[in-house]
Image 1 (cartoon, helix red, strand yellow):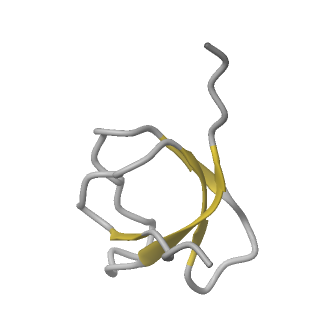
Image 2 (spheres, helix red, strand yellow; image 1 turned 120 degrees about the vertical axis):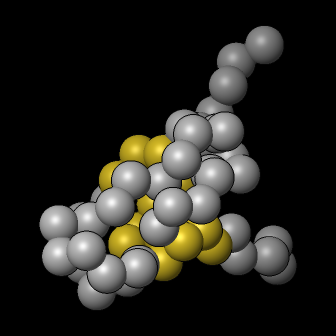
Length: 57
């Protein structure tokens, strides 16, 4: 089983894909190398990778 990819608010996304924020039913898209934006409540939050972006080569 693959290791879970978890990133916190203010961190840098290690891989592009759909992430599930803790305490929410939504999914957000994060781009590799970009900073994770803050949430509306101003509290730190963790994001777990749900679906990695697939690239065609």
